[in-house]
Length: 230
Image (cartoon, rainbow, N blue to C red):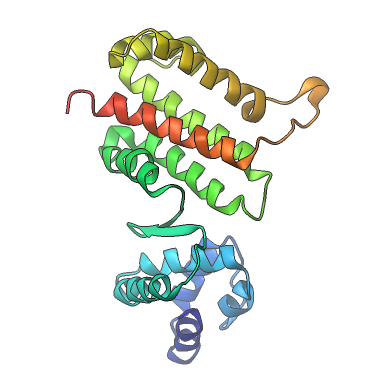
C-alpha cells in the first residue's frame, strides 16, 4: 500500500502529499521518491505514514480498507490495533475497551484537549517502546501529565497533582482509600519516570507490564472522574 502511494506520488506529481508525510516523520523532503527511501523497512515509520495518509481525505478509504485487510489476514498478534485513525498498543481487549477506548471517547470536549493530547502521547510512546525501551519512562510522564491536567480541570486550579490529589479524589466523590491509591500512583511516577535519579544518574527502567498497568490506572481515574455524573 505504501509502495503504491509513493509510486503514484512520483509519477503523478503529488509532491505536496509526499512533503506532508515527510514532515509527519520529522524528515526533510529531498525530492520525489524521498518517502519510500525514508520509510524503508522501518515498522514505526510505516505506522506513522499510514496515519498521515489516513488524515488525507483522498487516501482515507484506501488506507482504512488496506489496514482492515492486513489485520484480517494476520495470523498472529502483532501488538497493535487501529482505532479512529490511530494505531494503538494492543493489550487485554476488555481492559483496552474500558480503560483506553472509553477515556479517549470521553475526552472529546475542547476543555479536555490537553488531557487527551497527553494520554494519546503516552499511548504512542508505549506503542513504540517495543523497539525503544527508554520510552517506557516517557509513558509514565505522559500519563501523569494527563491525570494532572484532569485534576486541574476538576479542581479548577493550577496546582501540581501532588498538591491536588486529595481535592481531586474528594471532587470526584471517591472513598478515602482512593487517596492512598493516588498517592502511590504519584510516588511511582516520580520514582520511575518524572525526576532524575540520585546525583543526576539515570533511573532503572520500569518493566513493560508495570507501565501498562500504570497506563490502565490512569485510564481508570480519567473514566471515573469524567463519567461520574453520566
